[in-house]
Image (cartoon, rainbow, N blue to C red):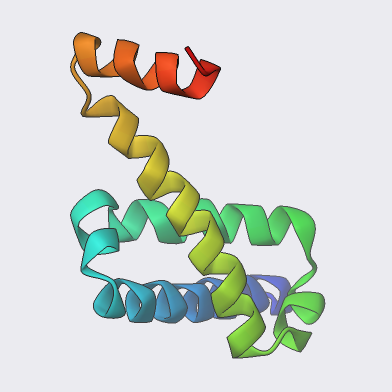
Length: 98
């Protein structure tokens, strides 16, 4: 394994641990999100935005807050998929202020 691969694996392991902790604390996340999909998605975002060194410099509390926000957006977005066409029309009307 190269040093870069080891660093990327460490990043994924850290993100996985933080996502698992958030899912343990929030039953809502467990109901709406898939653990493996979230780890993969957030790892991809993190690796695209930060070098492994930059990511390691972010403390767990800050990184957890960032991950929590991403997970919340995904969980809320998935809720709209559960609406019937009638409910979606009511939702759209409410958003548009009708």
